[in-house]
Length: 133
Image (cartoon, rainbow, N blue to C red; front, side, top):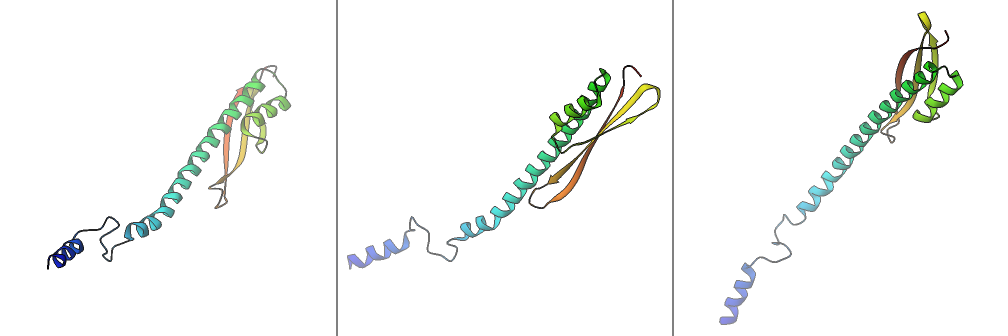
């Protein structure tokens, strides 16, 4: 009879590998459901960070191109400075304004969340007084 009591006691103790109930694996299932949402959120945050960083770069490039013009450099030098800062795909345009001022406009296509292919354009402007005009 002693052996029967020890069998009952071993059945009542929980196992190290789960309780044997119907909830086994539920944590794995919940993790499998939550993981794509976490990955998607990280991708969105990374895409927004890249989007913001690109805008700052385009604004910096517009200021740089305007500085080149203000120092009396040629338009080609200003375009080269803008492309060095913002990338080769930036579109640079100059618009003369009154009293010797020139407006530099940069436009750069940006792909938001590269996977979804949402096209946006960053635009930055800087106005500067050009020497010699």
